[in-house]
Image 1: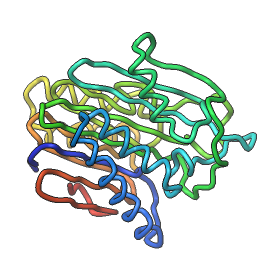
Image 2 (image 1 turned 90 degrees about the horizontal axis):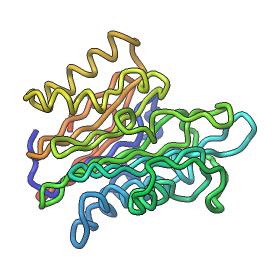
Image 3 (image 1 turned 180 degrees about the vertical axis):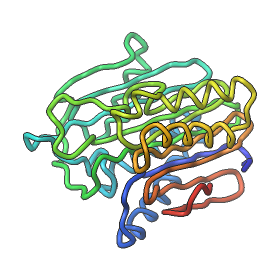
Length: 271
């Protein structure tokens, strides 16, 4: 479906969500949309993505930021990544401790010298307390100047080995943005790293395939290769077309555009 810009699309992670978690998740999504969309007044799609993800990190509802799960040694290690489509600027952080990893990724992007920084301690943060396991939060945005941006943030997999890094901070895997399309993925990182679904959607879009068809093709290929319960994604193109797909039980997500707002929980392939 096509939406009037500016457009902001977010997700709270694909997985086996329980119905009892619906209200908390949808409330957190609405707050994220409102915080992120305000950035369009003075900022770009990049700032909208950062603020929307920071809101989900702050909520404690999702496995990111304040809600990050613990690793095998009882510690918290978080990953995040961010990309601006027009300039293809990227900033990523991995295995860090920070209240808002997405803001640290934004710092890396703005500095411009490096793409990915790995650091065990960046700043003090609260201990993880989310009941979610292995999810990623993410956002994609299109501003009135036609700029696309994408980002992700995650606490990783519960009980993971210290130092494990999944797809979330890797461009083309957990997120990707060009002048054509912006994508944010969620699911099993080890599998996402093998097929790079975010990059594949951009490649199909570059070949002239419509966004919805590109998303369906990538999801179909991923599910055929690895089975179900391992991937969800949101995508937005330069024309304002938005799409979402997942092969898990649910993927809380939402969209705000110049004219309205919608949030979803487990409804299949709606945005």
